[in-house]
Length: 223
Image (spheres, rainbow, N blue to C red):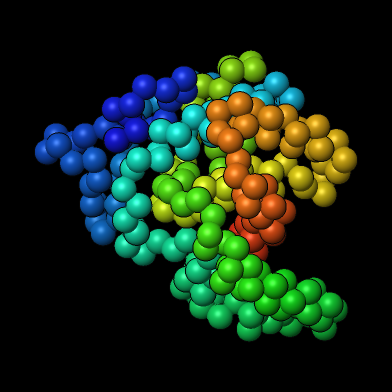
């Protein structure tokens, strides 16, 4: 609702009030919210769309920078691996019944150890503000090469700013896309840097932040 009081080049979801003025309604123990319809189509994406996406993310970060960074109850930052999902409070103890998974589990535990060292050090020194929390091309709407809306602020909250850029890159740099994703990734970063100047420590941390996004995504879905 606060974002909708600001002027931007793209839309964000607008919660509609019920007859009592509330935007969150409980019906039979379930919570519901209704939002205004936003036009547009899912991106392909193309290099032009990647640039537009990066610019929009930079614009969003600039707008969110002064917003209070008070923690949201029940929400955890990317650096709190044991709080990502209540069903997996000890992700290092993850086990799989298939004996063939031993190599994957060995990698998993090693990855967690390395990331925990990163979280305890460089991660805590990165610029922090309220972020989107789940940046992905699938959470956007386009009209041709123009980004018209960013969606899905379910995980918005205070965190290291660069995690949003890492999340977008993580979604692009998939095995399925292979080397074809590299121009898209470059275009995304180019668009973002037109609006936000990355600090040296953010640039240095970006590869590890992509790994952190991968681990948090896994913890959430396994949970």
